Image (cartoon, rainbow, N blue to C red; front, side, top):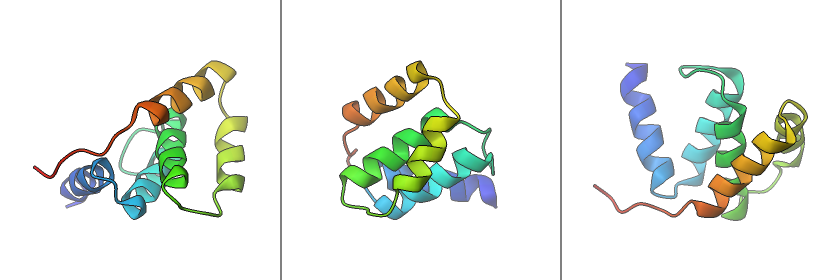
Length: 88
């Protein structure tokens, strides 16, 4: 069930698992299983990069090219504000 899987990807990303962050970023970029949302996609990719993931530069450029400067700024603001959540 993809809905349940998305819930677990989200919980894992919220707790700081970078693989889940990249998975969510991809889903949001492509509109797979969730509505297409470049702002969310860039936010998750930025957080993952800041947590040590490398090789994301090209994907970040693609996101930014499809977004307004205001959307990019908002995605980066959300990435700045992100903190890991405790396990529920």
